[in-house]
Length: 93
Length: 545
Image 1 (cartoon, helix red, strand yellow):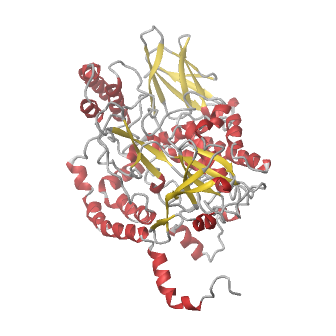
Image 2 (cartoon, chains in turn brown, blue):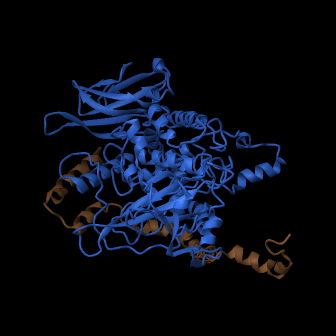
Image 3 (cartoon, chains in turn blue, purple):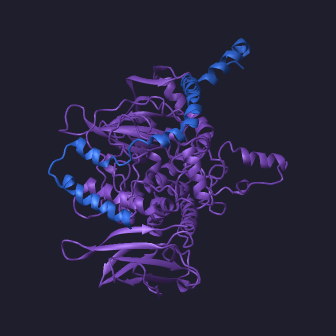
């Protein structure tokens, strides 16, 4: 309950900010930004994953590229290309 | 922890909206910003799927902040991480992500079925000009311009699966729109293929993703794919171009760095966590990053090129029992497309342990494999792990279930009817399955042992009145329901009615569905006088177990 009271005090103190006519976009946005950057200790705790995540960058870029250029189709066509001449032309019985 | 969070949220929304002690129903995240860059690779599925099955899973262990918190939750040392963008009534305020429609201001069944307005549907006469191929996606189609000059993405049913994808897409679009999420305006249309013409600059991509001119041969080839109506017309799904400039899919974790309006990490947003419940209801297993979409809408008078992003959910041709171009395997919704523990179990048991989904019968040829019997809302999964849904708490799911439960039988029947299946029994079967899945959702998330199912509070005649969502949904027996209330610290007073005397500004409530033997976690409701002299509910704090 003390924390609620604390927040209400904060509200009362900052209330005029919101009531002020015509705050700028940046002012309003700053008020919304309660969820700022993670604290330094929190960032340190995330470090083991951050290190591993770095290895994902080249994999991600490679997979994105492969998907973008339809890599499986290209490999498939490359492999079957030598046998193209064996295929019966369309319309021929 | 919960109370501190609630207090911070109250402060957040009061500051954002008004200096008065009013509940904030609108988040001002549509302030003008400079145009963000497009993310051209965001809709790629390979890396998204790989990342969610590997790196995202590793993150849960190696990010020690997360893993320690999870450990704390298991041992009941800390509370779950609740969504951070709820208002004082534990609701998601309207924003560029979500608009609380039917649950807050019920629409008639006709209104629900009528959306989107037919006036914006493709013109019923005149040429339909193909301007390009459809680009990505599994179902062939194209982008066309009608006589009004409006553009639509057009998709068809596969010839062997008539009415499957189009029916699923039109019904699910209406459901998600009614519940509040942003979706494209999708129309079920029928047209004579003779109306189709090709724009001289039209293009299509080949199998190597290279552009080349769209020719008559391409159109002839493409029209071999779709199912035809008996009169030769094509039945199609026409999705009206979303207003604004495409900016790629939004991220499933964190913030969009070039959007200053985006201040709540996406995984912490109530409307994204709660979407899981609605997605489970309609079996939207393809709810992945590639089907999310940001559009930049310019704001008039906001300065050169300034506007804001609006966030959409796309592509429901994979929902219900539809698999885009065929019937979806009943595995989806029950298992990830690659689910190592379940595969291992089947391997070890030499296939003798058959999963429940393997016996799901075909509901109807126009609906595919879609059932309620094997549906477990808590176990339901997307086709691969979805970080937005993962952190959903009991409160998030309660909120999602409230939205789902807001669709009444008459609403559901009207919406399902818009699938326009040629066999009327298809609509009836789908209605029955969706209604039963809805009931299962209510049973899972209005569970009085986890959260008090009391909601829709109002003040009248000096009493706090409310409704028991579990009883109203038919998943709890009214005869065994008991309710008790008190002012904080006072002894409980038990009743069989949904009324509590207002003896202080805060009333604590609990519910029992076993005749008063056991009680739910507490919900605290705070009221205050408003300017007109009436009394309003200004805060709801729900404890969960």
